[in-house]
Image (tube, rainbow, N blue to C red; front, side, top):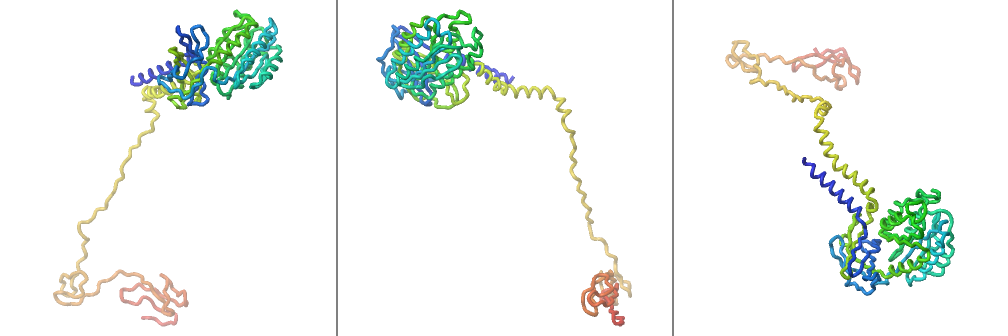
Length: 467
């Protein structure tokens, strides 16, 4: 019962995170005074954050008369001060034009309309703006790298010729790669008239993308790159040809971009011109994040301009990004939940199996302290045999040489016999214990057991005895 609150808290946090992952990154609030939209959040210089936002009047026309004091930014509930402000039309723009040149683009003047629309967009480039051209059919090709040379871009656009299949998703990935590292506002504008051959439709699978739609969306989202998608021609209506608006809307929504539909190729030029004007009228707002931590978490932003607010957000990308896919986030949460529940599971196992623990425990061995046996110490010294006078039989003190009563001389007490070290009488060298001959001169030596004071040996080498 004590672990239940911890489990509930963990599940609640996991649920809240999952709901946060499902929330759209860009939310738009509108009112009678117009609209505010956050079109891109640039965190390439984090903790410096740059927000590109457009403001429209009630008629839908871009407003270009706002100043820095008209904007307010709140990140995660904290109001921040702007450290940089670029008015409408002042930011440089890098645009990657990604154009479908599959075989179906040859029908109904689609490729001609695509060329005209791209030419119109290039014609509106301002000083400091750059554009690049990518085409795709069953493969992807960079026709023109980023440049501000309008003549070179027009020449590349005129060389677009339709053929083969459709690798839409690979074209999106290539556009993200080409825009990576470009300064300022980055625009990825994709035009297609059909479906990727990777999907089940009438074209061969090998004429489609190597990336899936989900992979393309995740790739653009991880790079913080919105995708503007234009569907050209007839809608598919669930068939295997025509524009699959469900897929194109999903790409735009999943990357915080926008989906546009053009039924007629002749309308493309006007659409591209309007889009260029809207992008060029954006404001750039820069501030320092109040949470300058590299923790991989999401930050929510609210931008208010002229009393109108728009919501957006970004994820600090230095740790693994799970905002692009709730499934990925759930998969990463499962091991954490497992670690939270593991201690309780192991504790329950230990409580449920006491007998097993008892059986597996090693036998107990009694430790007996060592017994110290102390030899008894006698209370008094052992008695010494009494000595009596040889004349009057009086009691003598131990070792007495004379009797205290009659004065008789007492015999010397016998001493324990012992073998004393002897020396050779011939050369005076010491003899080894028990030796019968001198090791130095060779004289024969007789060892004797004597009483104290007697000679210890006799020299016999010359035939003379000590006795």
